Amino acid sequence: MAIEKVLVIGNRDIARSIVGALSSAPRLTEKCPSYRISMLTWGSQTPYLPHDVPPGSITHKTSDFTSSSLEAAFKGEDVIIITVSGGSYKSQTTIIEAAIAAGVKRFVPHEFGYDTLNLAVQQRVYGGVERAAIIERLRNEGSKDGVFLEWVGVAVGCILDPMLLNGNLGFDLVWQSGTINGTGNEAFPVTSLERAGMVVESILRHWEEVKNQYVYAAGVITSGNEIATALEKNTKSKWCLDHSEVDDCVREGRSRIERGFLDSGMFLLERSVLYDEALHAAHPFQHRNVNDLLNLRPETIHDIVSRVVHDFDHHGKPSCGCGS
Image (cartoon, rainbow, N blue to C red; front, side, top):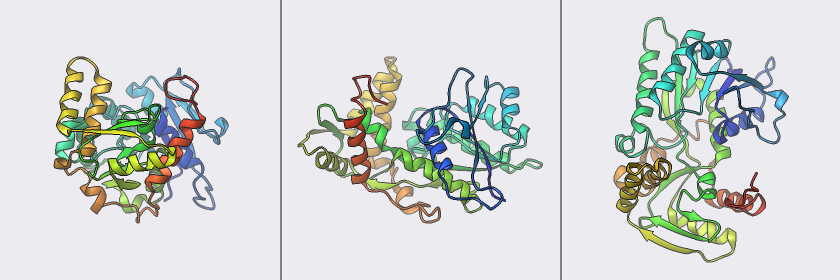
């Protein structure tokens, strides 16, 4: 049976990307030519939609995120996709339990990043242990008598374009400078934000082939040096680049967290995963990716970076307050 009714929980970039991909997806069936999409947010929020998605085409549901409120919002949905509270076991568990109570049969947890099943990555990345516990919880729920719950967890690697635009990957578009934590040749998986949404839509379309699995679907395997080269080519400028040790990145990240600077510390630890070959974080993306199964074409670093530079040039610089 084709998945038709889709509820996306969240109101940020990844939710917007998923809604955009669902809205522009090819025809499903003769009886249901398109997905019936709902977004679930807090009552104070307005859906953050792609420019080409009319607000009236999406059902906006609101919740206070209590169990009873969630259960009411979930009734009648075919699948729930969560894009919030990825590092909170309690929050995601509340959502899972409400989905089961509402009779929802399919669930996509908040992943869309690094390999949560990698034990070393779990210990390095903030919330990694709790994310892994959610995957284990879904596996256990699906095997219980009387409970029918299917799930798919998906890792796409580093979602590159926002990380370049906000500077969290160590490249500064304003000053055309950057710091690479390692030699620059370390291979790591990346995906564009747009493609992350396409991956989720394709998973729904190929649900029977991937259900009850944790899958890997990066857009491309790249390196710090390749990104730097693409930035120089697309900005037509020579960048000022330096290198530092991965261990320095880890130490500084942990130090910032200890001093109360959670966000900046977290971003440094996430960046260190890309360059730390000892973690073997790229291996499953290189050898067990499902791109062919999902009929997804690979991306190129040039294309991703080209769009980033275009957005930076035409939609305002990060510090000027005029970006869209």
